[in-house]
Each structure stands twice: as structure tokens, then as C-alpha cells.
Length: 185
Image (cartoon, rainbow, N blue to C red; front, side, top):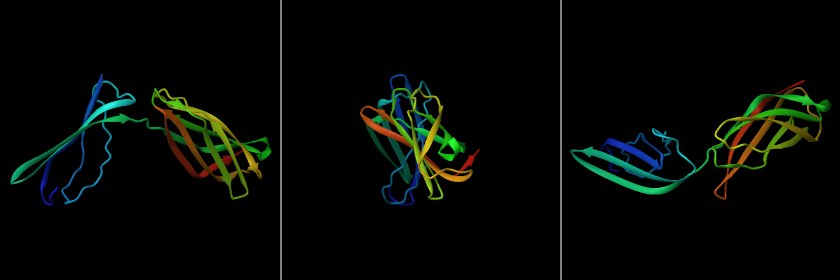
């Protein structure tokens, strides 16, 4: 868009059978193309994983009015939300820790084996696994992380998890890392 034009409207619309929504987005005319990510809330029904009709329109003005429209069928992909607990509990005399991981992924996706790695001061490291449940609700998993090197002790550790899911033959994941995981006894 040419610089110094005024944006009258910039809107994205999404529709599926049983659900639709629209959202405006902040656009300024700078004279070059740039991508935008937008989240479109459903105003009727709930969006489902799979195909959706997406359209965007932009109206600009500077003396005269100009309009641009585009439309395409896109795939609604799952968002995987994951959150590590702030503390872990020592187990087996430091040979392991137990950490809670909360994961939410939409119904229609399939949970895949996911990993959680905990390391402490470069002297101890280990990993554990869990499988997310994809039903649209958050689920908390208590994961046993056994040290493959060294022993854990009370104090600060680092944790990293990838919550893996699959939909339509593609893998999607959520990530959380905590550089200040507090290990308690």
C-alpha cells in the first residue's frame, strides 16, 4: 500500500459449517508488504480442526478510496499449550525428580509420546515421557524424570518439554522451558 494513506478497514473473516468469526487488525500504510498473524475468535459455534474459508479485506483512503480482497481455503491447525510446574520433587535419593506438566490441545488431535528433560548445573541430566490427551481441556501429567547422569539435589534446575500431537498426518507441538525450576525434597 502507498505510504500516508489512511486505513479505513482491515479485516480477516473465517467460516466453517457451524462456526464463523471476524477480527480487525492493526495495519498502517508503509509502502511495502509485511505478514500479520491474527487470532480470529469464533462468534458463533466453535472452530474445528480441518478446512476453513478465510478472507481478508483492506480499505484505504487518501482523497479516493481503494479496496483489496483475497480469499482462500486454509487448514485450521491445532495449537498445543504446555506449561511446566514451578517446582519439582526429589525422588529415589536424587536419582529422579517428579515434575507436573499441563497440556491442552484441541479435540481431533492425537497425543504422541512427548519428552521432558531436566538438567542441573551440568552435573545431572535425565528425561521422562508422557502422552498428551487432546480433548480441548487442560490435563496435568506427573512425569518421573530419571537421571541418566549424576544425581539431582534441592535447588535450581533447568527443564524443557516438547508436547507432541498429530493431526491429519502432521505433527504439531508446544514447548515450555523453565530455567529456574525449583527442586524441593
